[in-house]
Length: 159
Image 1 (tube, rainbow, N blue to C red):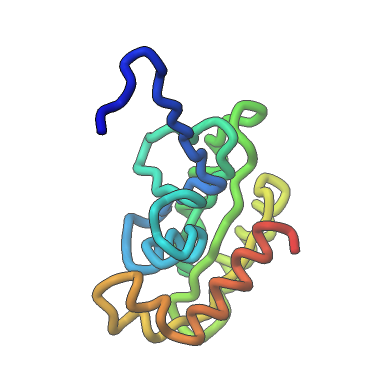
Image 2: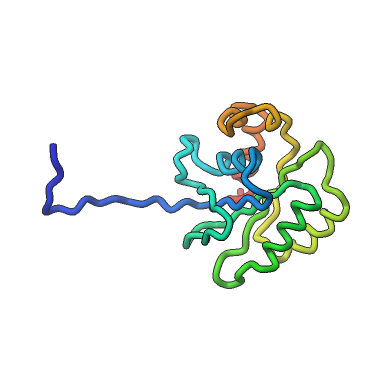
């Protein structure tokens, strides 16, 4: 069956809710956060990954992903200081624990100082499974990661 050339085909483009910007480079933690925020099929209908310098699409909530190291938080600080206010919504920050401990005092201080420039900050606990998986989909099969994903989505959606 061929398409009718007279009647235009209506295609609806789904605009994702979240644009994930890895602060410290695209790694397994960023890939897992992207998949956590996306739908279960992983088709990019709820979250899309954004590369360095790529503009945030209209209507998309930017989400910065950074490790809990001082270097990672300092990188967030540099990005947020240059963030275009009034043009793009303030970003959410997802801090991914790189060890089973709190961020270093210098990192915690910087996070408190940045609080007013962010839409919100949420923390992912240390997820040891991220050290042993090849793909983000494999990590999401873990029960601890699945619970962390549900909490992350609830926090970003204000539930």
